[in-house]
Length: 150
Image (cartoon, rainbow, N blue to C red; front, side, top):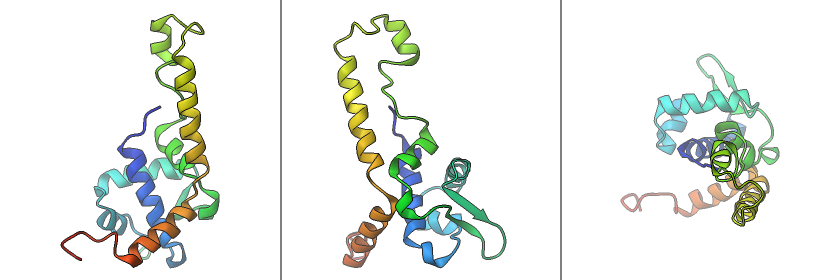
């Protein structure tokens, strides 16, 4: 299981869209500026998010990106798997497992399975809607501002 900057930045972008769902499409440049995500990298992330059916793109002067489904129906797991692929224990599967040769005779395998299951449960039970509402509260309280802005 690997969570990289793709997941971190992709989730930030998706929360940004969820916070602005009533404003119509949001440009990648606006999201990039607000979230501090390099614009070119963000555009690459939106390719994966579009392929997964999580966002749609609107062309034109007032175009941009918008959530393709309601924020309450999109989980963090949806975002992570759209960008990273399926979450599974990378220690005990694939090429490493074949090279290890222990297969089912490994006491550690159960630990990695439980850890992956716990992470999946948290990501699957957290929606963009809940994160957007939390972000709005944080923004209103001033918690999101830098120490210089306070």
